[in-house]
Length: 304
Image (cartoon, rainbow, N blue to C red; front, side):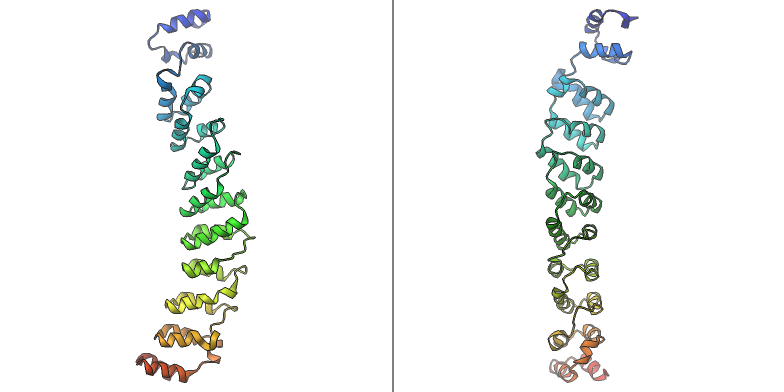
């Protein structure tokens, strides 16, 4: 058998075989001799470039066991290919390399946060990765709530930054990410009402109004928003909340609604007991008469 010949004889024979690379699988002994006889880094490390280009895991793993290949290859090019191909097995092997520095891995993490949870998990296990806030922000923009949850579960974002990201989720309307961040029980929710005032979202508003951590001393501004924007659904939620007073300022909200002829808002406010207690019917009728709001005038006169 050819494989029983002395090693130096086999190597000399292989050097004269034009297609000897096709003989690699004959036996382990013969295979190892082929690796000695042939230089896998020839033609600018073509072997590893080809293996990664076609995403062949088996050949790539075999080539990466050869120190000549590892030292000669364009490491950044190879790892980027494995990253783009979602070749998790090879990628996990490559990020252990000394050339996989923090800057490169942080960039991979940021890109992964746009939708690849599995790649995020791999990178979060690497101690050289430290760009958590930039990556978390990318996940937030994409509203990737499962990735958001992964960061929170691993305690990669401090509470102060998490509260800031919560406000950002309100400002850019990322509801699913907002829900995930809200699950963190130790958040203070500082600034959330102000953010909701700037960028209203009904689902976010309902969540905050039913959370005991919300600072309701600032929630009065939401009545302004509801009345000003004729937002019936928000006003309904606010009127049901025990810590929000719609009669503030001697029924200021009702008077303003009368001046702006917002009949639906007026009807809803008048259903509230605190508003009814100090309801100045005469003043409201005078406003309707002054501005010739016929429908409002008739409604106020018919109101018991």
